[in-house]
Length: 505
Image (cartoon, rainbow, N blue to C red; front, side, top):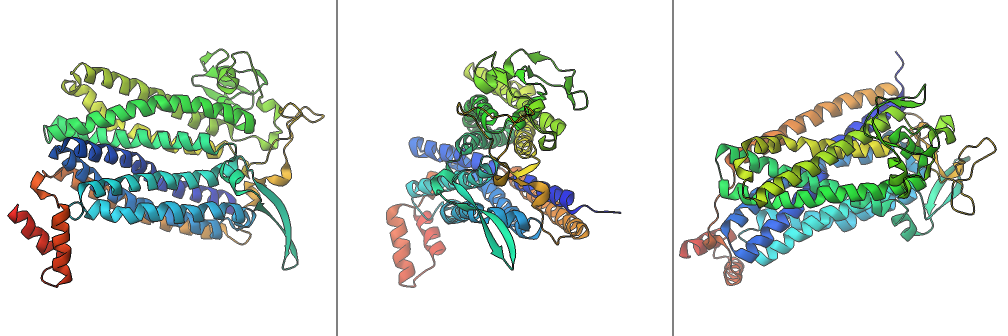
């Protein structure tokens, strides 16, 4: 049996990325919720808000650890499975990954210790600062990852250079303008959409657990306040996702017309209808069973219902993305996004009328609704990556004086082929299919075990629930100074001094 290292390497990277991507969006979304809860505590001094913040912080910390553990693997895969790719993009891609580690990860992980262990050891104000820094660090980490990935989608700020290594020519992209690399044509649009997706996931996660507590009649005050704050955030984020999606549609139409055509099964150039759903038929170049909004794709791409949208008929056949996979992942993501809007608006209306928490059927929906944002984030990432194929580095499109794609004599879009890299040409020369398969099986077993551990720890913490917090349990500035001076004179440990201070209070 022949084991193709290209397809196996693609499958392995897809699995490891998608498993890893379960966790960063969740920590990004939960980080903002933590900032809200601690901010409310500082404003009101109601212990229930601190109790909520402590509880969600414990779940945040476990998820953060999973994200770190699963993210390391991908960097090794660049060298083991994708050596040609690494040589081509190393100068550009490496700078973004290094910046993520230096500026984002250290900020997030440094303050994480204060966030998790500093509740009774620092003042509430300083702990709130630590929470803000962790939340900011998680989003800042996403910035650099999106910069690197967006450069693969719409490269800018680089030059193509050829060097001789061991007597052989090696072509690579080298940074010419770092700011253009960072702010390449798709970075900001994709970053905003990614962050919004993470906020939707984090808020739905909080609402899911809160709804479960309400249905069980446990920790009801905590659950109501957590649910209310997360619902407000989820409603705003769900609406913002629709607006961001429209902006991204315009961006993709300009810079990656083949991807947009695959997303919508738009085979023939002309006015584009927006299909609600259907089944693409590549052989007949149509979408079957597809109710559509006339001119909807034209509006999405050009904000004009009658605008011409480039179809797959203008794309050389060898450069078509996988149409069915692109279409399905994109449309499922959109359908879920519309569902989030409807669900959060309904819940917000009921909350405004004071009837939300009496609707047990709706609370049951929210318990399981967290699966929707998880799936939507995975589908969005898959659509972006599959729609870029067959390129791993998408080349620029040759344009005319008016900025429109220039067509060749056969009426086809022309690519700047020297700027691109096909996925089939990016795999390591010496990697064998059997080696990739063996590592996939091993990583699959490890990842399966990690997932079970994560779910077990989450379930254990959720079953125990939030612990009550009393106002007297806080360390004052004076108390902290007393503890420090006592430790300096070796009279007592930090924890012993803290315990004595609480007993005195």
